[in-house]
Image 1 (tube, one colour):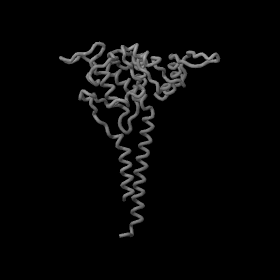
Image 2: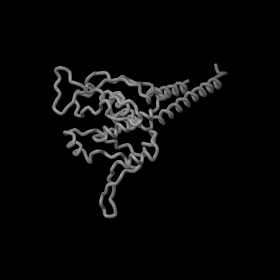
Image 3: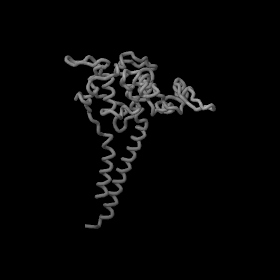
Image 4: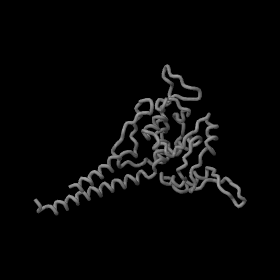
Length: 257
């Protein structure tokens, strides 16, 4: 019975992280984050490939001028439903520094599938010089790096507005109800019709925010679906093993009273 209990505890511990979801509060403000039903949430959730592809479009047209995605290679775009030729076309639209060549010189060339998405700035000082002293963070792991995950990033993107009466916003800052301290250097990045979707999806601010957050969730954890599949298999294996162990226990101790 102790073996059976131990196996059951292990199974519970593996299932628990998949079941637990908390309504996180925005840091410092105590404001409950907007709650969105993400397609990739839950035990059996998978990424909405159409939303991820639209989110890639939003990232490239809106976010990439300030924010990098340094942990994503162009070859990874095949995983979101693009074919290899489409990924090659996107890669070739970027300029990548390579070298040295035979003369010992660095040179620029079009991107290839094996390249990682280049940062919009050469270094942190260049980034700050172009953004009034602020250094736009890399977005590769942003969803995982913030408490509240997808809901926090979605709330932040849609949380800009006028400051409440009595609140003074510093020069160069913008009021955001969900940002710690409620004052953020980044100007509102999204608006209705900020992107004309290739697939004709309605381009409201909320839809655009939803899609780019879905893309960033994928960027932060491209292996999420494989991890969930493996988790389900392991839990099923442990359940079957528990039943077998219980049967063996009954058989071994059947005549022992």
